[in-house]
Length: 134
Image (cartoon, rainbow, N blue to C red; front, top):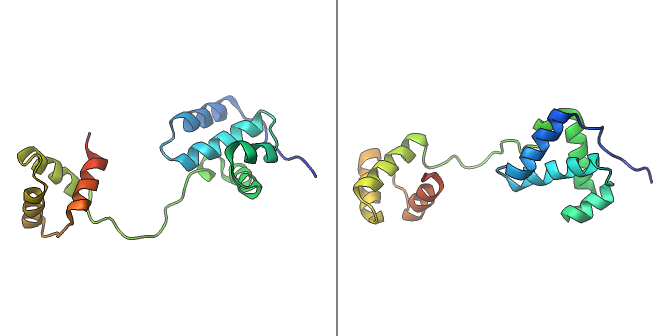
């Protein structure tokens, strides 16, 4: 079986991948960046798949995406799905309402619905606040 590696990385590519590996927001991106870095260090696809505990075909696909599109090939593409219930303006309004009604999720929910006309479950409000709170 032929051994396959990515082409030797340039210094900027190494820095970008190392940064993504250490500080990437999504686990999938960190894992893909790690795979490319390991290949650059001389690890085979089999070794990388064992280290990262993924299938060989996944590692091979990551290599192809890297070769075709570079770093952009490693990032997740937007997917279809339900549109978010709350937009950025709603998040900002929620934060302002929390300042007025701390620890009162029902009052916050009622006031938010009154102001925006959007009926949102308390669990959705909690999730939005937890995600967007500084």
